[in-house]
Length: 259
Image (tube, rainbow, N blue to C red; front, side):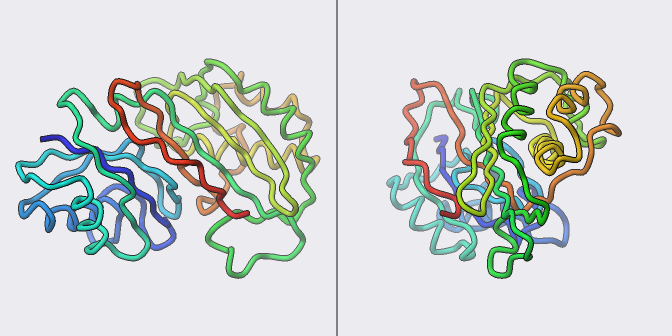
């Protein structure tokens, strides 16, 4: 039996999603918890691996098991064995052809920036901080250069292992909510550090260091060295993974990230 599971986590305490020797990861925590519920070792596959410090409002995973459990037993059993920073949201049996990563149609991320002169305290690991005043309208204007299908070599990490740098951005919005500036981006898939590199470029433009056209110039250069600073991880949230309707996965109401 193949089970799909929705997962929420605070990435502050973890060295990213993927299991690594000697450091805490979300994957390790999930596999340990689900193995106890299944009463056998469980290996999980996620829709998108997140970096150290990155959060998820709804990550999606799948795993195969011989154990027969009600849907709620996977959820509450996992949560009884997970650390407080990780929570299972829902569970659903799926057909064998379902794959958390390869069946996904779109992924949506949110990047949250606290824009004020004074550094944050209790929000320090929940958002990025930019002391320079940001003009969200300039940032939104710059974002338009990145919509559509492009080679995003300038916006990916130098260590990115993706075979192709071509991705399609369907939505890239910038909005202000009081002291917070929020970047919402949806694409078919993302490259390593792609959202954080986009955020870094847009923040320099919003601060007046560069003109909005620079976002397009960086894109056209296909050179990461010209792309500016990578924004910090703790402002980044994996918000939603979209799948074909035939898999009949739950779609939870979108939750506000900080407001």
